[in-house]
Image (tube, rainbow, N blue to C red; front, top):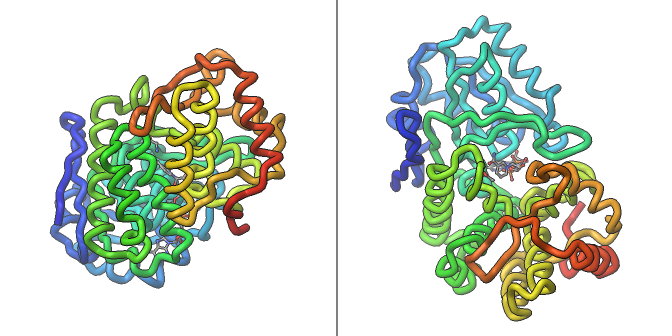
Length: 368
Ligand code: NAD
Ligand code: GLY
Protein backbone atom coordinates (compact mmCIF):
# COMPACT_ATOMS: atom_id res chain seq x y z
CA UNK A 1 0.00 0.00 0.00
CA UNK A 2 1.25 3.45 -0.89
CA UNK A 3 0.04 6.61 0.77
CA UNK A 4 0.54 9.99 -0.86
CA UNK A 5 -0.66 13.37 0.36
CA UNK A 6 -2.28 16.22 -1.47
CA UNK A 7 -0.78 19.04 0.59
CA UNK A 8 -3.39 21.75 0.99
CA UNK A 9 -2.84 22.95 4.55
CA UNK A 10 -5.73 22.03 6.83
CA UNK A 11 -7.57 20.57 3.79
CA UNK A 12 -4.74 18.13 3.00
CA UNK A 13 -5.84 14.59 2.30
CA UNK A 14 -4.36 11.16 1.68
CA UNK A 15 -4.42 9.09 -1.50
CA UNK A 16 -4.28 5.40 -0.59
CA UNK A 17 -3.20 3.15 -3.46
CA UNK A 18 -3.10 -0.62 -3.15
CA UNK A 19 -4.67 -4.00 -3.73
CA UNK A 20 -7.75 -4.91 -1.71
CA UNK A 21 -8.39 -1.56 -0.02
CA UNK A 22 -12.09 -1.51 -0.85
CA UNK A 23 -14.06 -2.84 2.07
CA UNK A 24 -11.28 -2.12 4.55
CA UNK A 25 -12.92 0.31 6.97
CA UNK A 26 -9.56 1.56 8.26
CA UNK A 27 -9.03 3.73 5.19
CA UNK A 28 -12.54 5.07 4.95
CA UNK A 29 -14.10 5.63 8.33
CA UNK A 30 -11.52 8.03 9.84
CA UNK A 31 -12.63 10.54 7.18
CA UNK A 32 -16.34 10.38 7.99
CA UNK A 33 -17.26 12.90 10.68
CA UNK A 34 -21.03 12.39 11.06
CA UNK A 35 -23.32 9.35 11.00
CA UNK A 36 -24.96 9.81 7.60
CA UNK A 37 -23.29 8.44 4.47
CA UNK A 38 -24.69 8.55 0.91
CA UNK A 39 -22.88 6.17 -1.39
CA UNK A 40 -23.16 7.18 -5.04
CA UNK A 41 -22.35 4.72 -7.80
CA UNK A 42 -23.58 3.62 -11.22
CA UNK A 43 -25.52 0.61 -12.46
CA UNK A 44 -22.38 -1.09 -13.82
CA UNK A 45 -20.24 -0.67 -10.72
CA UNK A 46 -23.02 -1.39 -8.20
CA UNK A 47 -23.29 -5.16 -8.84
CA UNK A 48 -19.50 -5.44 -8.77
CA UNK A 49 -18.49 -3.42 -5.72
CA UNK A 50 -21.41 -1.85 -3.84
CA UNK A 51 -21.78 -4.67 -1.33
CA UNK A 52 -18.09 -4.62 -0.47
CA UNK A 53 -18.13 -0.84 -0.04
CA UNK A 54 -21.23 -1.00 2.16
CA UNK A 55 -19.60 -3.66 4.34
CA UNK A 56 -17.04 -1.12 5.51
CA UNK A 57 -19.81 1.35 6.38
CA UNK A 58 -21.87 -0.88 8.65
CA UNK A 59 -21.43 1.47 11.61
CA UNK A 60 -23.10 4.34 9.75
CA UNK A 61 -26.57 5.39 8.72
CA UNK A 62 -25.91 4.58 5.09
CA UNK A 63 -28.05 5.04 1.97
CA UNK A 64 -27.17 4.66 -1.67
CA UNK A 65 -28.11 6.03 -5.05
CA UNK A 66 -27.34 4.07 -8.21
CA UNK A 67 -27.15 6.29 -11.29
CA UNK A 68 -27.36 5.46 -14.98
CA UNK A 69 -23.95 4.67 -16.44
CA UNK A 70 -22.40 6.92 -19.05
CA UNK A 71 -20.89 10.27 -19.94
CA UNK A 72 -24.24 11.26 -21.49
CA UNK A 73 -25.74 11.20 -17.98
CA UNK A 74 -23.10 13.51 -16.50
CA UNK A 75 -25.52 16.43 -16.33
CA UNK A 76 -27.64 18.49 -13.96
CA UNK A 77 -30.61 16.09 -14.19
CA UNK A 78 -28.46 13.36 -12.68
CA UNK A 79 -27.15 15.67 -9.95
CA UNK A 80 -30.80 16.36 -9.12
CA UNK A 81 -31.27 12.61 -8.52
CA UNK A 82 -28.52 12.74 -5.90
CA UNK A 83 -30.12 15.76 -4.21
CA UNK A 84 -33.45 13.96 -4.20
CA UNK A 85 -31.92 10.91 -2.52
CA UNK A 86 -30.22 13.10 0.09
CA UNK A 87 -33.42 14.99 0.88
CA UNK A 88 -35.60 11.88 0.87
CA UNK A 89 -33.32 10.40 3.53
CA UNK A 90 -33.33 13.74 5.40
CA UNK A 91 -29.56 13.94 5.25
CA UNK A 92 -28.16 17.04 6.88
CA UNK A 93 -24.95 19.01 6.85
CA UNK A 94 -23.01 16.33 8.69
CA UNK A 95 -23.62 13.86 5.83
CA UNK A 96 -20.68 12.52 3.82
CA UNK A 97 -21.01 11.50 0.16
CA UNK A 98 -18.90 8.62 -1.12
CA UNK A 99 -18.23 8.32 -4.88
CA UNK A 100 -17.72 4.70 -5.94
CA UNK A 101 -16.95 4.48 -9.65
CA UNK A 102 -15.18 6.14 -12.53
CA UNK A 103 -14.62 9.79 -13.29
CA UNK A 104 -18.24 10.39 -14.20
CA UNK A 105 -19.47 9.27 -10.77
CA UNK A 106 -16.62 11.12 -9.03
CA UNK A 107 -17.34 14.39 -10.85
CA UNK A 108 -21.11 14.18 -10.25
CA UNK A 109 -20.79 13.18 -6.59
CA UNK A 110 -18.19 15.83 -5.85
CA UNK A 111 -20.38 18.49 -7.44
CA UNK A 112 -23.45 17.33 -5.51
CA UNK A 113 -21.36 17.45 -2.33
CA UNK A 114 -20.13 20.96 -3.17
CA UNK A 115 -23.72 22.20 -3.54
CA UNK A 116 -25.79 20.23 -1.00
CA UNK A 117 -26.66 22.52 1.87
CA UNK A 118 -23.80 24.76 0.63
CA UNK A 119 -21.21 22.03 0.91
CA UNK A 120 -20.77 18.69 2.64
CA UNK A 121 -17.70 16.41 2.71
CA UNK A 122 -17.08 13.69 0.16
CA UNK A 123 -14.73 10.77 -0.40
CA UNK A 124 -13.45 9.33 -3.67
CA UNK A 125 -13.24 5.57 -4.26
CA UNK A 126 -12.15 5.51 -7.92
CA UNK A 127 -12.61 2.23 -9.78
CA UNK A 128 -11.33 3.07 -13.29
CA UNK A 129 -7.70 3.64 -14.19
CA UNK A 130 -8.57 7.13 -15.40
CA UNK A 131 -10.21 7.99 -12.09
CA UNK A 132 -7.35 6.48 -10.07
CA UNK A 133 -4.67 8.47 -11.91
CA UNK A 134 -6.50 11.73 -12.47
CA UNK A 135 -10.12 12.60 -11.80
CA UNK A 136 -10.36 11.50 -8.14
CA UNK A 137 -7.45 13.75 -7.17
CA UNK A 138 -7.53 17.53 -7.10
CA UNK A 139 -11.11 18.54 -6.36
CA UNK A 140 -12.39 19.43 -9.82
CA UNK A 141 -16.06 18.44 -9.81
CA UNK A 142 -18.89 19.13 -12.20
CA UNK A 143 -21.08 18.12 -15.09
CA UNK A 144 -21.40 18.70 -18.82
CA UNK A 145 -23.75 21.06 -20.62
CA UNK A 146 -25.10 20.25 -24.10
CA UNK A 147 -23.02 23.18 -25.36
CA UNK A 148 -19.79 22.38 -23.58
CA UNK A 149 -17.94 19.73 -21.61
CA UNK A 150 -17.48 20.22 -17.82
CA UNK A 151 -18.96 23.71 -18.03
CA UNK A 152 -20.90 23.58 -14.75
CA UNK A 153 -18.81 22.78 -11.69
CA UNK A 154 -16.97 23.68 -8.54
CA UNK A 155 -13.64 23.10 -6.86
CA UNK A 156 -14.36 20.86 -3.88
CA UNK A 157 -11.59 18.68 -2.47
CA UNK A 158 -12.37 15.15 -1.24
CA UNK A 159 -11.49 14.11 2.33
CA UNK A 160 -9.53 11.12 1.02
CA UNK A 161 -8.99 9.02 -2.09
CA UNK A 162 -8.97 5.22 -1.85
CA UNK A 163 -7.72 3.55 -5.04
CA UNK A 164 -8.10 -0.22 -4.83
CA UNK A 165 -6.06 -1.47 -7.78
CA UNK A 166 -7.82 -4.86 -7.83
CA UNK A 167 -11.03 -3.14 -8.99
CA UNK A 168 -9.27 -2.65 -12.32
CA UNK A 169 -9.50 -6.42 -12.90
CA UNK A 170 -13.09 -6.01 -14.09
CA UNK A 171 -12.46 -2.95 -16.25
CA UNK A 172 -12.70 -3.64 -19.97
CA UNK A 173 -9.70 -3.11 -22.22
CA UNK A 174 -11.08 -0.03 -23.93
CA UNK A 175 -11.57 1.72 -20.58
CA UNK A 176 -8.11 0.65 -19.41
CA UNK A 177 -6.59 2.21 -22.53
CA UNK A 178 -8.58 5.41 -21.99
CA UNK A 179 -7.01 5.65 -18.53
CA UNK A 180 -3.54 5.12 -20.00
CA UNK A 181 -4.03 8.30 -22.05
CA UNK A 182 -4.08 10.37 -18.85
CA UNK A 183 -1.01 8.46 -17.60
CA UNK A 184 0.89 9.36 -20.79
CA UNK A 185 -0.21 12.97 -20.24
CA UNK A 186 1.95 13.30 -17.10
CA UNK A 187 5.01 12.13 -19.02
CA UNK A 188 4.40 14.61 -21.81
CA UNK A 189 3.74 17.55 -19.47
CA UNK A 190 6.69 17.39 -17.10
CA UNK A 191 8.06 13.90 -16.55
CA UNK A 192 10.20 12.81 -19.53
CA UNK A 193 11.70 9.87 -17.59
CA UNK A 194 8.19 8.55 -16.98
CA UNK A 195 7.41 8.99 -20.69
CA UNK A 196 10.49 6.89 -21.51
CA UNK A 197 9.43 4.31 -18.89
CA UNK A 198 6.02 4.10 -20.57
CA UNK A 199 7.68 3.54 -23.95
CA UNK A 200 9.50 0.56 -22.41
CA UNK A 201 6.67 -0.84 -20.30
CA UNK A 202 3.44 -0.19 -22.21
CA UNK A 203 2.97 -3.90 -22.95
CA UNK A 204 3.06 -4.61 -19.19
CA UNK A 205 0.35 -2.05 -18.52
CA UNK A 206 -1.82 -3.48 -21.28
CA UNK A 207 -1.23 -6.97 -19.87
CA UNK A 208 -2.34 -5.55 -16.48
CA UNK A 209 0.83 -6.55 -14.69
CA UNK A 210 0.03 -5.46 -11.10
CA UNK A 211 3.49 -3.98 -10.38
CA UNK A 212 3.45 -1.94 -13.59
CA UNK A 213 -0.07 -0.66 -12.96
CA UNK A 214 0.71 0.20 -9.33
CA UNK A 215 3.85 2.07 -10.39
CA UNK A 216 2.02 4.03 -13.12
CA UNK A 217 -0.84 4.95 -10.75
CA UNK A 218 1.52 6.06 -8.01
CA UNK A 219 3.73 8.12 -10.31
CA UNK A 220 0.72 9.74 -11.96
CA UNK A 221 -0.81 10.62 -8.59
CA UNK A 222 2.52 12.04 -7.38
CA UNK A 223 2.63 14.27 -10.46
CA UNK A 224 -0.95 15.39 -10.00
CA UNK A 225 -0.74 15.90 -6.23
CA UNK A 226 2.29 18.13 -6.65
CA UNK A 227 0.60 20.33 -9.26
CA UNK A 228 -2.64 20.60 -7.28
CA UNK A 229 -0.77 21.52 -4.09
CA UNK A 230 1.04 24.28 -5.99
CA UNK A 231 -1.99 25.67 -7.85
CA UNK A 232 -5.26 24.31 -6.48
CA UNK A 233 -7.56 26.73 -8.30
CA UNK A 234 -5.75 26.71 -11.65
CA UNK A 235 -4.49 30.25 -11.69
CA UNK A 236 -1.33 29.08 -13.42
CA UNK A 237 0.53 25.80 -13.60
CA UNK A 238 -2.48 23.50 -13.12
CA UNK A 239 -3.72 24.45 -16.59
CA UNK A 240 -0.88 22.26 -17.94
CA UNK A 241 -2.91 19.24 -16.81
CA UNK A 242 -5.27 20.13 -19.64
CA UNK A 243 -2.78 19.08 -22.31
CA UNK A 244 -4.84 17.70 -25.19
CA UNK A 245 -8.10 18.67 -23.49
CA UNK A 246 -9.12 21.70 -25.58
CA UNK A 247 -9.01 19.52 -28.69
CA UNK A 248 -10.31 16.51 -26.74
CA UNK A 249 -13.31 18.27 -25.21
CA UNK A 250 -14.22 19.53 -28.70
CA UNK A 251 -14.12 15.92 -29.94
CA UNK A 252 -16.29 14.70 -27.04
CA UNK A 253 -18.89 17.45 -27.43
CA UNK A 254 -18.78 17.41 -31.23
CA UNK A 255 -19.26 13.66 -31.57
CA UNK A 256 -21.85 13.42 -28.75
CA UNK A 257 -20.93 12.59 -25.15
CA UNK A 258 -19.98 8.94 -24.73
CA UNK A 259 -19.15 8.29 -28.40
CA UNK A 260 -15.46 8.87 -27.92
CA UNK A 261 -14.29 8.09 -24.39
CA UNK A 262 -12.70 11.01 -22.57
CA UNK A 263 -9.28 9.33 -22.60
CA UNK A 264 -9.53 8.56 -26.32
CA UNK A 265 -10.40 12.17 -27.12
CA UNK A 266 -7.54 13.43 -24.95
CA UNK A 267 -5.12 11.01 -26.66
CA UNK A 268 -6.00 12.38 -30.10
CA UNK A 269 -5.92 15.90 -28.61
CA UNK A 270 -2.39 15.41 -27.26
CA UNK A 271 -1.23 14.29 -30.71
CA UNK A 272 -2.84 17.39 -32.22
CA UNK A 273 -1.08 19.57 -29.63
CA UNK A 274 2.22 17.85 -30.52
CA UNK A 275 1.62 18.34 -34.25
CA UNK A 276 0.80 22.03 -33.75
CA UNK A 277 3.90 22.47 -31.56
CA UNK A 278 6.04 20.91 -34.30
CA UNK A 279 4.52 23.09 -37.01
CA UNK A 280 5.30 26.13 -34.85
CA UNK A 281 8.89 24.91 -34.78
CA UNK A 282 8.88 24.22 -31.03
CA UNK A 283 9.44 20.46 -31.09
CA UNK A 284 10.93 18.10 -33.63
CA UNK A 285 9.11 15.77 -36.00
CA UNK A 286 10.75 12.95 -34.03
CA UNK A 287 8.96 14.13 -30.86
CA UNK A 288 5.63 14.00 -32.71
CA UNK A 289 6.45 10.51 -33.93
CA UNK A 290 7.31 9.39 -30.37
CA UNK A 291 4.06 10.87 -29.05
CA UNK A 292 1.91 9.23 -31.72
CA UNK A 293 3.78 5.94 -31.43
CA UNK A 294 3.12 5.76 -27.69
CA UNK A 295 -0.61 6.47 -28.17
CA UNK A 296 -0.81 3.80 -30.85
CA UNK A 297 1.15 1.33 -28.70
CA UNK A 298 -1.50 1.92 -26.02
CA UNK A 299 -4.24 1.21 -28.58
CA UNK A 300 -5.36 4.83 -28.47
CA UNK A 301 -6.32 7.12 -31.35
CA UNK A 302 -3.62 9.45 -32.61
CA UNK A 303 -6.02 11.35 -34.88
CA UNK A 304 -9.39 13.03 -34.27
CA UNK A 305 -12.54 11.92 -36.09
CA UNK A 306 -12.58 13.09 -39.70
CA UNK A 307 -16.14 14.37 -39.53
CA UNK A 308 -15.35 17.46 -37.44
CA UNK A 309 -14.54 20.35 -39.74
CA UNK A 310 -12.05 23.07 -38.91
CA UNK A 311 -14.91 25.53 -38.26
CA UNK A 312 -16.73 23.13 -35.97
CA UNK A 313 -13.52 22.49 -34.03
CA UNK A 314 -12.94 26.24 -33.65
CA UNK A 315 -16.53 26.80 -32.58
CA UNK A 316 -16.29 24.11 -29.90
CA UNK A 317 -12.80 25.14 -28.79
CA UNK A 318 -14.01 28.71 -28.27
CA UNK A 319 -16.09 27.48 -25.30
CA UNK A 320 -12.98 26.13 -23.52
CA UNK A 321 -12.44 27.32 -19.96
CA UNK A 322 -8.92 28.46 -20.83
CA UNK A 323 -10.26 31.10 -23.22
CA UNK A 324 -9.46 34.50 -21.70
CA UNK A 325 -11.00 37.72 -23.07
CA UNK A 326 -11.97 35.88 -26.24
CA UNK A 327 -8.41 34.67 -26.84
CA UNK A 328 -7.83 30.93 -27.17
CA UNK A 329 -5.06 29.57 -24.96
CA UNK A 330 -3.68 26.11 -25.57
CA UNK A 331 -1.36 23.74 -23.77
CA UNK A 332 1.45 23.04 -26.23
CA UNK A 333 4.85 21.38 -26.08
CA UNK A 334 8.36 22.79 -26.06
CA UNK A 335 9.69 19.26 -25.75
CA UNK A 336 8.63 15.89 -24.39
CA UNK A 337 8.16 16.62 -20.70
CA UNK A 338 7.96 20.38 -21.23
CA UNK A 339 4.42 21.69 -21.67
CA UNK A 340 3.45 25.37 -21.73
CA UNK A 341 0.15 27.26 -21.66
CA UNK A 342 0.15 29.92 -24.33
CA UNK A 343 -1.93 32.14 -26.56
CA UNK A 344 1.21 33.10 -28.45
CA UNK A 345 0.81 31.06 -31.61
CA UNK A 346 -0.07 31.88 -35.18
CA UNK A 347 -3.72 30.92 -35.65
CA UNK A 348 -3.12 30.15 -39.33
CA UNK A 349 -0.89 27.28 -38.19
CA UNK A 350 -3.68 26.02 -35.92
CA UNK A 351 -6.07 26.23 -38.88
CA UNK A 352 -3.66 24.20 -40.97
CA UNK A 353 -3.45 21.49 -38.30
CA UNK A 354 -7.26 21.38 -38.00
CA UNK A 355 -7.68 21.23 -41.78
CA UNK A 356 -5.21 18.35 -42.00
CA UNK A 357 -6.93 16.57 -39.11
CA UNK A 358 -10.41 16.78 -40.57
CA UNK A 359 -9.15 15.65 -43.95
CA UNK A 360 -6.77 13.01 -42.63
CA UNK A 361 -7.67 9.42 -41.96
CA UNK A 362 -7.82 8.12 -38.41
CA UNK A 363 -4.86 5.84 -37.74
CA UNK A 364 -6.92 4.12 -35.11
CA UNK A 365 -10.66 4.64 -35.31
CA UNK A 366 -12.22 4.95 -31.86
CA UNK A 367 -15.22 2.70 -31.51
CA UNK A 368 -18.53 4.45 -31.37
P1 NAD B 1 -16.60 6.52 -16.49
O1 NAD B 1 -16.78 7.09 -15.16
O2 NAD B 1 -17.70 6.69 -17.48
O3 NAD B 1 -16.27 4.97 -16.32
C1 NAD B 1 -16.05 4.22 -17.48
C2 NAD B 1 -16.91 2.95 -17.49
O4 NAD B 1 -16.33 1.97 -16.64
C3 NAD B 1 -18.34 3.12 -17.01
O5 NAD B 1 -19.16 2.34 -17.80
C4 NAD B 1 -18.30 2.55 -15.58
O6 NAD B 1 -19.54 2.08 -15.16
C5 NAD B 1 -17.31 1.44 -15.76
N1 NAD B 1 -16.59 1.03 -14.58
C6 NAD B 1 -16.10 1.81 -13.59
N2 NAD B 1 -15.34 1.08 -12.77
C7 NAD B 1 -15.36 -0.19 -13.22
C8 NAD B 1 -14.76 -1.39 -12.81
N3 NAD B 1 -13.91 -1.43 -11.78
N4 NAD B 1 -15.03 -2.52 -13.50
C9 NAD B 1 -15.84 -2.48 -14.58
N5 NAD B 1 -16.41 -1.37 -15.06
C10 NAD B 1 -16.18 -0.23 -14.37
O7 NAD B 1 -15.28 7.09 -17.19
P2 NAD B 1 -13.85 7.47 -16.64
O8 NAD B 1 -12.95 7.26 -17.77
O9 NAD B 1 -13.55 6.82 -15.35
O10 NAD B 1 -13.99 9.03 -16.35
C11 NAD B 1 -14.20 9.94 -17.40
C12 NAD B 1 -14.78 11.20 -16.80
O11 NAD B 1 -13.84 11.78 -15.90
C13 NAD B 1 -15.08 12.26 -17.83
O12 NAD B 1 -16.35 12.81 -17.59
C14 NAD B 1 -14.02 13.31 -17.60
O13 NAD B 1 -14.45 14.60 -17.95
C15 NAD B 1 -13.79 13.17 -16.13
N6 NAD B 1 -12.48 13.66 -15.67
C16 NAD B 1 -12.45 14.48 -14.60
C17 NAD B 1 -11.26 14.93 -14.12
C18 NAD B 1 -11.22 15.78 -12.88
O14 NAD B 1 -10.15 16.29 -12.56
N7 NAD B 1 -12.32 15.93 -12.18
C19 NAD B 1 -10.06 14.54 -14.73
C20 NAD B 1 -10.12 13.69 -15.83
C21 NAD B 1 -11.34 13.26 -16.30
N1 GLY C 1 -7.66 16.96 -15.06
C1 GLY C 1 -7.23 18.32 -14.99
C2 GLY C 1 -7.11 18.84 -13.59
O1 GLY C 1 -7.41 18.18 -12.64
O2 GLY C 1 -6.72 19.94 -13.43
